[in-house]
Image 1 (cartoon, rainbow, N blue to C red):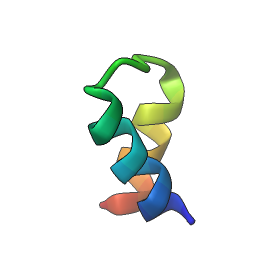
Image 2 (image 1 turned 90 degrees about the vertical axis):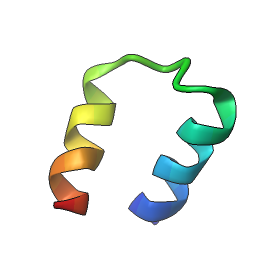
Image 3 (image 1 turned 90 degrees about the horizontal axis):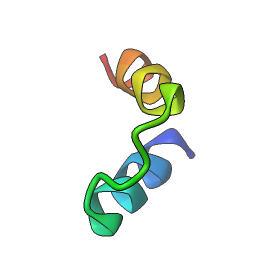
Length: 29
């Protein structure tokens, strides 16, 4: 689930610069 979200962000071009990105990053490692 998280992986998909991260992938989506990359596709958008890192447009979403919200704290959510940080959370996803932590989950990723």
